[in-house]
Image (tube, rainbow, N blue to C red; front, side, top):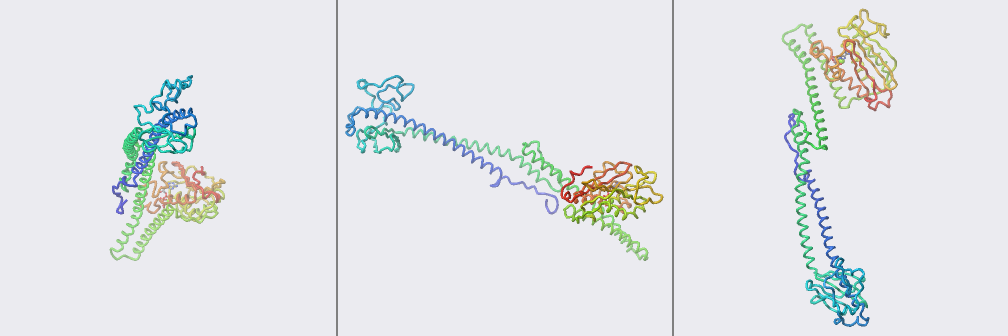
Length: 547
Ligand code: ATP
Ligand code: MG
C-alpha cells in the first residue's frame, strides 16, 4: 500500500534473474541430466572398449598359447638358440584352437569335443596355415630368450621391445598396437601383438556418436525442462499478479484455484481465505472509524452549536450556566467514548494490564448492585443478588467494570416497557437481598455460582429479549440493537455500543468466557465465567467451558 492510500503499484515479482526459481530449477535439471547422460555414455563407452580389447586379448592369448605349445615340444637346449628355422605358425585367425586341434565352428577357440590332439605325423601332413593371414596382415609375434635375446622374430617392420612380464601372462598397449606377453618354457617370453588402429578408430567413431547423442538428449531435456518448469510456475505468476492487484481499496480479487495443481491449490485456497479475512478486517476497521467519527460528531456539534448560540449576543448568567452545563455533558460523553476506545485498542494490542488477585465474584456482584441501586430505583427496577461465594483469580477493578455494564444494560434495555404486569418468567417469591421499591415489579437478578472449575456470574432480566439475529453481533463495537433509537437524543444520553465489546475484551484477557442467551419477550441472561484456579488462568478456556 502507498502512503497516500490504498493503491499498490502493479509491480510484478521478477521471475527472471539468478535468484529466479525457474532458472534455479532449470540449472539443477540440466546438471542432473548432464550427470545422467555422462554416466550413461561413459559406462557404454567403457563397456564397448572393454569388450573390444577383451576380444583382442583373448585372440592374442590363444595365439601365444599356440606358440607356447610349439616351444614345449622342443628340447630345452634349443630354447637358447635361434628358432628362426623351427616351423612355427599361428592360426589364420586369432581365436582358433591351439595348434594341432581342429576347431569347433560353433565354439571358436575351443577344440571339438571328443577329438584327440594331432600327432606329429599328422601335423606334418597338415601344415598349419600361414603366420599372417592375408586379411589380417598386422598380426605378429616375437620370441625372446630369458635374457632378452630375440630367438624368433615374426614382427616384420614392427619394433618389439623386450619386457619380462611380472606374471605368467600380461598385456600392453604401445601406440596403436596391442600385445600379449606370455612366459614360455625355459623362461622364454612370447610376445604376440597386432595393430589395433581399426578398433581405435571404431571406438573414436563411437565416442563421437555418443557425444552427439548426449548433446541431443541434453538439448531435448533442457527444452522439455524449460517448458515443464514454465508450466509449473505459471500458477505462481498468476498468484503474484493477483496479489499485485490487491490494495486497500480492492480486496475483492481472488486467486483462481480451479486451474491449479493440487499442491498449489491449497496454497491458493490459503491465500484466498487470508484475503477474505483481510477484507473483513479492513471492512471492520473502516466501519469502526466511521462509527467512532459518527459518535464523536454528535457531541462535538452539540458543543459547537451551544457555544455559537451563547456567543451570538449577550446572555444572562443563568443562560451561560445552562450552556456550560450542556458543553460539560458533551465533553464528558466524548471523554467516556475516547476512554472506551483506548481500552479497546489496548486490549486488542494485548496491552491490557491485569492486576490479578483472588476475588469473590459474589462480593463484586453485591458491590455492583449497590453502586447501581440509585439508578435502578430511578428506573423502578428491583436488583436482586443471589447465589453463593465464587472465588476466582481476576483483576477486581476490570471485572467490576464488566459487572456494572451488564447490570446497567439489564436496567436500561432489559426492562424497557415492562411494568408489574408485563414482566414475565420471574418468580414473585424469589428471595432478594434488596427490598422491592413500592409500585415496581421489574426485576434484575444477579447471581453467582462456583461449579468447581469456573466461577460464574449471571445477570438476568425479564424484558423483551434480543432478536436472535442480533445476538451474534452484540459484542461488536458500536453495535446497538435498535439503530433507529441509537441515533435518537435518548440514546445519545445512554450508550455508544462499546460496553459489551469492552466486557468481552476484559473477559477474554482473563481467559474467561462471556455469553448471552435471550428469548423474545422472556428476557436475557448474560453469563460470565472465570477459571477458579490460578493454574487454569494461563490456559485457554474456550474449549473447557461448556454450559
Ligand atoms: P455503552 O455500554 O457503550 O454505554 P450500550 O449499552 O449501547 O453503550 P452495549 O453495552 O455494548 O452498548 O450494548 C449493546 C447493545 O446491546 C445495546 O445497545 C442494546 O441494544 C443491546 N443490549 C445489551 N444488553 C441488553 C439487555 N439486557 N437486553 C436487551 N438488549 C440489550
Ligand atoms: Mg452498555
